[in-house]
Amino acid sequence: MKVMKFGGTSVGKPERMHQVAQLITKDAEPTIVVLSALSGTTNALVGIGESMAAGNREEAKQKIDTLEAHYKQFIPQLVKTSAAQTKAQQIIGEHFEFLNIILKISFSEALSKDILAQGELLSTKLFSVYLEEQGIPHSLLPALEFMSIDIHEEPQLSAIRPKLMALLDQHKDKKLFITQGYICRNARGEVDNLKRGGSDYTASLVAAAANASVCEIWTDIDGMHNNDPRVVKKTVAIEQLSFEEAAELAYFGAKILHPTCIWPAQQEKVPVKLLNTMQPDAAGTVITQEAGSVGVKAVAAKDGIVAINIKSSRMLLAYGFLRKIFEVFEKYRTPIDMITTSEVAVSVTIDSGAHLKAIVKELEPFGTIEVETDQTIISVVGNEIAQTPDVLSKLFDALRPVTVSMVSYGGSKHNVSILVPSSYKTQTLQLLNKGLFGLE
Image (cartoon, rainbow, N blue to C red; front, side, top):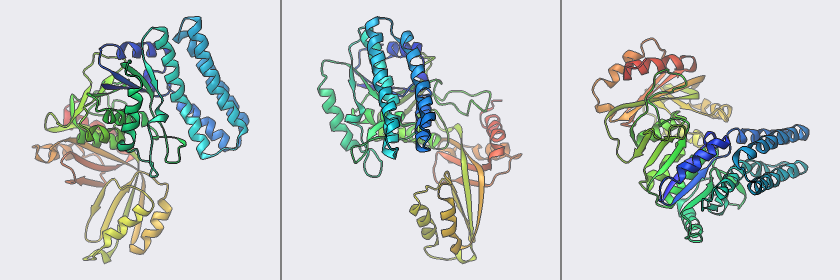
């Protein structure tokens, strides 16, 4: 059994869906295919929900009609027979009838989750119609029947695995299965989701639950690159990463892979491959237990960072001081990305300002608080960086023209992170591409 996940751009056009069908039927190994919503759909559904939340139902209706028109234009290019087109149109009709009905219902958070779920439900059902037209045997596995999260909004493999395996046992005559990414049920049994990028998470959870031979993540880029190709002109794909290296890169800004995608596959030692739907023959990137090589592999950038500096002369020999500071962030469920300490100061970074005012207010009794917004964490990731000759000298030589606010090194053998004002982000990535990889 293998798992293949296709993102929104991979199924965003009818011809892309046709290509996906070719990819998933290339070999005889039983396969579970995880699909995202068609590109642009989730954003459109978010917009519908926002209009409803604001009480502007007329605007929500306009957005629903626009999205429905897009899907109606999609059908004639996806399937050709009248029977398939009729079935596809019925699917569209059912889901947009639902969206129109909820215009008359009081808006709630639970309702917004139902709205967001429509994208994946539509993409998988329409893809199934195309497979039927092509005579490709398969079964739809409804994600809402096996994918779930607990009261802490965390999925538990121990709960997912038996439900998934029971569904597979019901279709022993099939070798191809289609399911939805992103969507799930919460602890109350309501429709919910795994948050943005959750289709990657779904694929990894399914691969771990089914003990798959591989989890393939198909996108529109040929693997994880050594730098951000949107910012740096010349980048190269990385052949192999360890789970730890990939997790660091994903967390610190590499967009191709959602950070949560790593741990389920790592837990069950399922290799993850990052492949390109547009260039299916490209080698891509494989992520396994083994790193494959030592040294620097890639650079990633994480924007929207807030730096908080706590200065206090009372820190000197103050037992429990750090614990009290960390308890403030724990109270507001705000993770810390970087931390540096001295005898008189502690500096930390967070990636969300949602509770910033409350956090600062609770930190004020500990000392003088300084806050810097619009910061970016640049992470240099690789295997055994600390033991690799000249890495640090090359890193800091390259960074001479840049204002560096913080440095985090030693907490992980895979990572050196620096904090810079976001205005220096592009320059920093370009300098490191030249200094560490010799690419301009």
